[in-house]
Length: 636
Image (cartoon, rainbow, N blue to C red; front, side, top):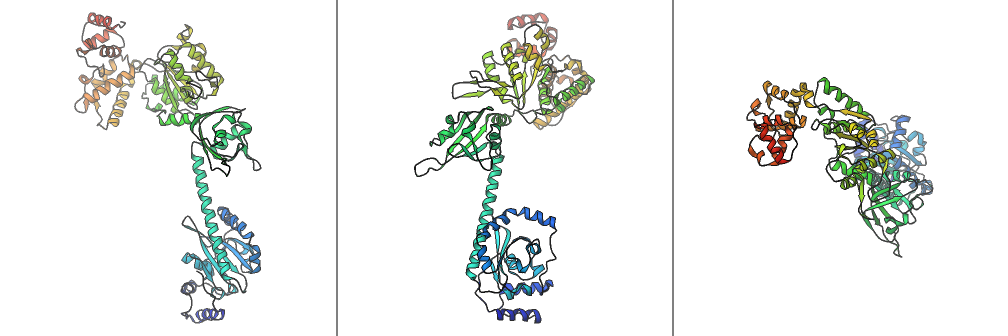
């Protein structure tokens, strides 16, 4: 609040009258009068300034560190006007939101050294009425004449204080104090104080905004650069700096990192084109350096042009392909769906297998999981990945028997369609994670040999390319048959077998772990009830006995199908023996006589055993032989 000049004699009289007689003159400014009343009520002494409320040296050091940005900025700002301060014997103070003096600039405040005033609380409770307490109370600038100060030793000069807000939050008070009485240009001092206030507010707000922007940029999965003509990098976010360091483009205080010095194909990149005014959006770019060849998805935006229409700089946003692979993998659900704990079984046979899986998960070896179809090899692969050091990376699955050799090779290694378009394969997609090769015995020997060579050297080429890309992947392979025997017979690549068989886990068939049947059945029912929000159903002991006596050629996968069928087709909450259909969702009716698919499912449920299938379908073996021949199936 700007106030007109007042007679010192009158102000001194008003003060004396109140202090000595307790009578308030009506000409006293309302804010001052209110503050005097509070000062008296608080018992603040009027003779000398109280400085006993002083922070410890360590606490004050931490406080100054916290507000170091504001302290440093105001110090720099005050240096250019130091002569003005000296001419009028002015002292500048920076005070925090708790009225603690953070810094004393220019001349000593109240003839005190900075060490005496800094770290001292100068609120109403300590020093009574002052421009500081009034600015704090009313959150507005205020000029206070010397005789209005509560402490007499402070009445030699005037003072003016202004609150400082940053993004709407009250943070500081800045104060200009005249050490002695002198004729001062009041308007100029107030203007200077308000200029410093708004300047500090703007600077701190911008600093916070820049910090927030930098935090956002550092948190993004993109490398962000501001590149100047010639290749100098004026700014890079955290990922960008990591990438620059990786290619040897080191930045120092004296010299910016320069892409032109380290990117061998710089003139063929979208950045170089950007300086000719050509933007690029989500373009796949190869960066060739002495250290490594990188691939990014890159966007380049040219910034404003000068008088000659030359682009002043460009902004580059890029995502490394390997990071994009991980992001896509997680977005597509390429993560472990099961843990090893989800594999139920307490019998000695399965407990030993499960314990070995935990041990294997912790080492760095590739893994081979062997067992009959339906024993839970896929679930175990998920569990090993989740329990491994690669759990944060993707889990990519490739079924080796689902495609022709040509398509399988492209699916595994990736393929370059032309000079501009190249797609990564499952091997690259699984980088930093796990590649689960299901039915690995069906992998052609030529592809298996190429995979083995790539795993040994730690890099791979896409089909149709010669560019080597680094890979870091763990293989978990699953095989329904004896992979070692297939290798000895020359039906599987020896080198790949040696790689994946460093750790071998053999999952037992369900018929060899019948003691686990009650736990398995209960677990399947609990999963179904939770998934479909239905009541849990009870399995009678005689039903469990029926399940235990069956050989389960389809193993746990078949058991899952059988229990699921019973769960949804049993009225009430009790599953009885008659509710069990050992063919799962295949009904023992006459559809199999006309529908090959239905017959094949029944054939698989019986494990390819004619006698077992005859019992399931309640027909003679002779009849089954006729249909086996009709559908082109082998008998056993």
